[in-house]
Length: 464
Image (cartoon, rainbow, N blue to C red; front, top):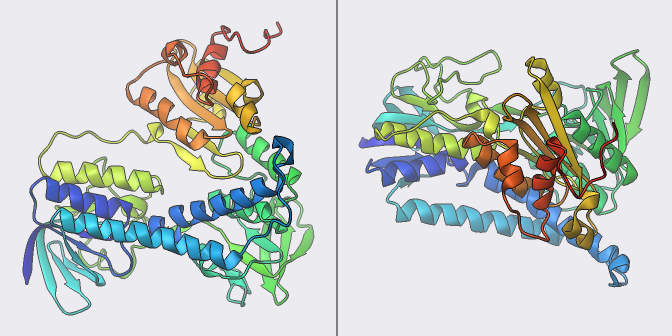
């Protein structure tokens, strides 16, 4: 039986970074991961999907270069090679994680772990490991939606779709959240007909309504069929997806050759011993934790998707580093989740941090809004990507940034600027006073801040 100061179960972004930081902090650390290091993000989520999207962007740009004075004839794509490159990128990153763990002195076990008590981890290979501190970071898996026909050939979840080596002729996506919209973007940019079927009356429900309306309009303009406000009742051979309106029960059917079930993700908390050692979970299986990711069992932490705070890779990483420092007795503070950006890699990209306008209004504050259109940004115009806007939601009394929403090129990068200012408790005015380089897309952040105070010189004078 090997003894460690800390054992991390799960080698995704939260787990692998937590293990390295623990080792950096002087703790003898083990990391247990039964599949590929890097978890869902590197192997079945963030990185693979963004690799696919980049391939689709290159194909789309090559076919649509004429307005830029660039012509290319007979442009085609090789779907199998797109998938092959996706696999190669994931493999390279996963191998990189293995190298990092080794270089930092973390002992990695490629095995399935079961928790037998608060200090003992049993490996499927027969070995038991003991520790003083246990960090569970087992991630999540595609949620299974109980619909008749969900087991038919051609009906896949996101993992299954990523493993397909042939391109669909018409894909039906059940679910209009982040996963559904990103895959829709990938396929329509390859020229594949796409239908999104969503129970809510709009896509990307948690986002600001101005953003979701823009995304919907853009998808429609690119030929994506949106069937909103309906519940899928069954799937039959064909593949035919039968649905009914949530509002009035009206029936409908859409037919394709692949159906993607994109109904969110469920925590991987069952069958690993959490209940055995007495860890509390809610009815959906998420582990209950405090602000430092501590469970109700002393010495046991839960980070990443399994605690349900925010199912994002960068949140898992931040939680992992927080826990590692807390265990080592270093100064640390709880995460402010309202200051962490969320991103959607549609086209144009969109990102947000903080509250939507609707959420801010519900707080009872005197809320102001400042929006600047990408049509007035020189860099975006040179790129031919001047669709979108940047939007601040702020408290008029204090100038506090309550939320920031952006859709356009580089949006997922630009949200970090506002997140940093929010973390430092900065104001809208301070962003406006910050000199941004020209010409860059980042100027839209500054301009939107100026709009808040009616001092924007690059926007029409507002009507009284």
